[in-house]
Image (cartoon, rainbow, N blue to C red):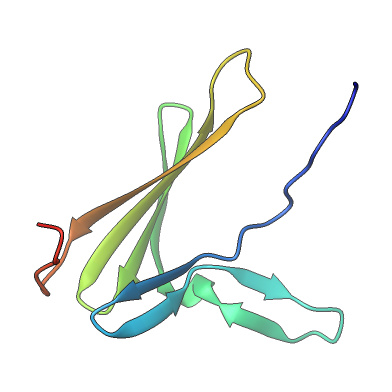
Length: 91
C-alpha cells in the first residue's frame, strides 16, 4: 500500500515508589520546557551502535535502549531496572 508511519516522540512516565517520573522533554514554541525529563538523565552512552540512556528515579536507576533490527521496519525499546531500593512486587 506504500503507507508510512512516523513516531516523532514517546512521552514515557515511569511509576516507582509511589511517584511518577516523566522521562520525556519538550521545548514548546513559547520557550517553556515541560516535562523536564532531562533532569533525571544520569548518563548516555553507546553500547556498540545501540544508544543507552540511564535515568535516576529517586533511589533507582533505569536503563533505556532503543534499536532497529537490520532490514525490518521495527523499532524496539527495552527498559531495565538496574538498581532499586524499594522491593518490586514483580520480584
